[in-house]
Image (cartoon, rainbow, N blue to C red; front, side):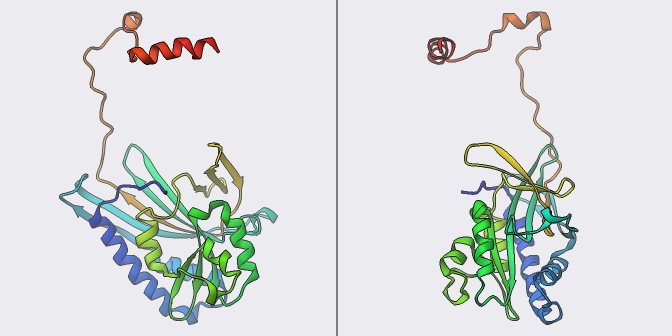
Length: 264
């Protein structure tokens, strides 16, 4: 399951309202931007882009003025390694949650198609995206709606739209699934400066690959100024006193370490 990030309900509602209206606006402009998927994604990103909004939160875990904004960026490719045939994605949605003393990030890769009907190419791209299947979706742009599909749905359909199950409106995929952490992954992130995608693999290793993701939509959320709580201490000691204060461990844990760790 994706790691759930804490975002107050009032902030979620504010963001969801914007996403709903922005996607509806993007759909209305379909015929003026339907040359290809990249153009439509750029059109969608422009509709989603918005200034900083302030939401006054009360009666929640973290009260005060929360701020959020959305931006869109299109990156130029870099040579052969910039093609999507290695990754299967032509864009990424990002969520950055700034706490002042740390930043939580989660990402969702996507591959888009215009008026998807039957596409063996989408199947091939979905096979590549299955490496990140819990953090990837396929988007279908149509004149009446923008819809999202899971990678599993695309693969099981064998690339035929009418056989694909579980389609949901894109605005719902973003508001109800991605932002609320039902899809996406906090171990997946893209460094635009280094043009490198990072994630943690099944063996617990953080791996990175050089890759230029063409387009990014990023949601930035800033909590009220938070300071890291100082650790409460009973006594301040001098460096010369360190050895008078052996670190405490449970008796059983100490015996286990002496009998196993140091004798292996």
